[in-house]
Structure formats: C-alpha cells, structure tokens
Image (cartoon, rainbow, N blue to C red; front, top):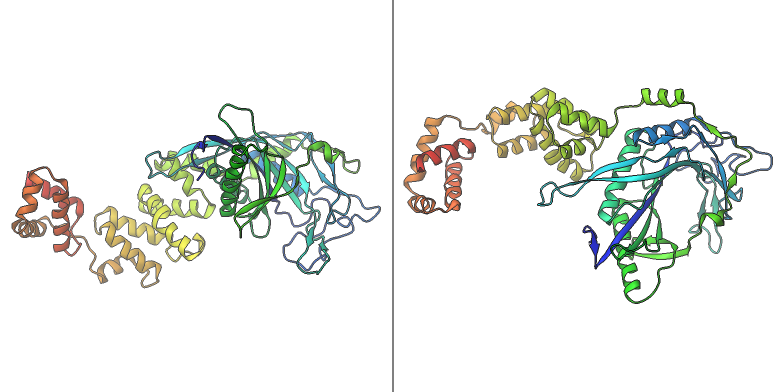
Length: 489
C-alpha cells in the first residue's frame, strides 16, 4: 500500500525507536534474574522494588553489549556517558522515575543498511541506509496486569530493571515497507551479535514507529507514535492504517495532534492512548546515585577483537570469494546458520551460484512451510552439495533435481545417486539416442516446424516440449535446444 514514495500526493516520514532487551543473566542495576515467564514478583529484589536505602550498581555485561552494538553499526562509543532520571508516575514504576540516558548516550550515530524490493521485479532492489541518532542504556518498567483482577490492576515487577538498549533513528524512512525492512535488518544485527534474543512475543524486541505525512517539500508534519509493535506483520498494518488515517484527517481540514497511539490487531486500527510528552515533561537530570559511565578505548578494542564476523562484513567477503551479487550475499547472511550452511555447500560442490539459488529458493521455501530452522533441516549441506554436483555435470535436469531433493527431505533416502538410479532420473546425454527422438518428433510435427520458420517462437518451445515428453523428461534441455536449432536452420 505504501511502497511508493507518495501516497495520495503525500510523502510519508517514519522514524523508529526500538527497545532491544539485552541478553544479560541479571538486571541492569541489580543482581535479580531476567529470565522470562517466572511467577509474578519472584524476580524483583529490593533494588527493583525501590525500597528505601537501596542503590543501583551498573551491570558491566549490559555496557559490553551496548559497545558491541555500536561497533556493529559504525557508531561512536562515548568515552564518557551520563545516566539520568526520567521522571514520570506509573503504578509499575516503583521509584517514580526510570534510569535512562538523555544528553550524553553511550552510542552515538551510525547507520543500518539493507536492501528493499524484489530482485525478480523490473525495478529490482534498492540499497537503503537509515541513519541512527543514538542508542542508550536504560531500565525497563514493570507490568500492569488488567485481565486477572476484576475492577483492580495487578503489578508484576519482574521486568522492572531489565536492561534495555533503546535504538533511535533519524526520520529517514519513506514507506511502511522500508520501515519494516529496517526493523528486520536491525533484528538480524542484534541477534547475530548475540546481544538480544530477538523474541518479539516475549517483548525482547519492541518497536515504536513515529509516523507523519507531509506534502512534498513541506516542513515535517506532526508525528504520532505507535507504541510496542511486536510483530513485523502488525508493524506494517499499523503504519499503513496510520498513514491513511492522517491523510484523511488533513484532507478533511483537521490538524494532527501529537499523540501516543496503540495498534489493535483485531480491528486493524490505531487509537490514541495519551497526548505525547516532550523531554521537558520528564524533568531529566543526572542520576546522583550513578557516576558517569567511562569507557576506555582499550575496552572498546578488546570487545572489537572478540566479536564474530559481522553480517555486512561477511556479505562483502561472500561477494569477493564466491562471486555472488550483493543481494544474494545479503540474503545468505540473514543468520549465522544460513551463512555457514551456504559456505559448507559451496565449498563441497564448487558451484556457489547454484548453492545460493537452492538455499534461498527451494530450501527456504521448505523451511518456511515447515516452520523449521536450518540447523534442523533434513537435508544436510553435504547432501545438497552432492545434488548440485549432479546438476552441474548434467547427470540430472533441474526438474529431476527437485524430485531428488523431495526424496532427501522426506527421508526416503540419504544418498543422491541412489535416488537418481532408483527413480530413473538420469539425464539422456547420448546425442545419437537424442537424434533418434528428434527424428520421430519432427516427422509428426510439420505444422510447428512451419510456424517456427514463419517466426513464431512459441512453436519452437512446443517442439522442445514434445522432445522432452518423448524422452520421459530425461533429455538435457540445453542439448535439445541446441540440436533442434541446428536441425531447423
């Protein structure tokens, strides 16, 4: 709906704020556990409950994960950053303020790059880059439970103090499709480097979308913030609805008021929750209980040396080492499992492009349909490499290869050559046997021959089809094309 630059004559402007829950064992300022799903209030200690006399102590692991993120997206790591108190009252915020960062965040600048579009379409892909403003450390609040108590609200403080990295973009995105592609790429980065488990159902990766519309060239419109989007599908639906709603309001002569809104997946609509606060409303000031966070350059360099190869670095290496396109390399680095599977397959078969096509095509389709991860796939990299070798040496056709893959996937057999033999899928590469079939087909298809010579390409394809049928699909299509062209010319 909003894939194009303009929607009903309006330009869409989107910025994102994402809360990634950091993968530490304990909370950001206390030693309470962060595991999901515990009984209410069993993982909240005196610090999380804000009991008098308790003091926060910084979790070093949370800082390391913030440094890793900054390095992954090319940001500046602040040598000195400040924790601030963000003051607001909410029942599940025991202190009456949240410890966050305001003026000096730990991670500054950087960018997230990704591809947008379909490689098979006429417009192809476009490489996009979304600039980051900052990423800062903060604690999560608790949770208000409304469903379990009639006329009352329960408070669960298990989440209070859970370490978050809030990642804020510039308003660089111009469609809901672009915003979702950004969110998916960001999700890939934080899970790849292991700083966040990315579990959206459990709230480990939550996105807020700031959406506004304007006439091209006009000043930025008033934004409304859609809170807590925890699935890519709902994210796109929410933004699409909000964009059209804002355009309708403006067209009807009504002004957009800055607000925080929620998306209801059942109705597919957004609704205002409260008018949006500005920074001044939170009365930020440096937290007197926490000293400035000082990160020495040696610490940053040590973290850098211990990090795994980043997706964009690996993608560049796959392009250089295997001659892949940027798009293919980007797709194969969706996860470390997929990248490792590709490299194992490509090295074993010596056909990187074919390996890429099979993994991003047939293999991915099967995995999506069965909701299986690549690590549990019934076809190993060695088996796929063996199959690809048989395509490359013309033992089997692409169609036959799909039948072999099917047999491997269903566990019918583990041996590629045994399947080819048992199913009689070996391609006919004997030119004398093929010439004989050609004679028979041409003898009974005078009309097609005549039409082909009159310039009708469809007639040639019909002849190829007849030869393939007569050979029970075992003829080599490339060879059939070549011999037919020679005979008909």
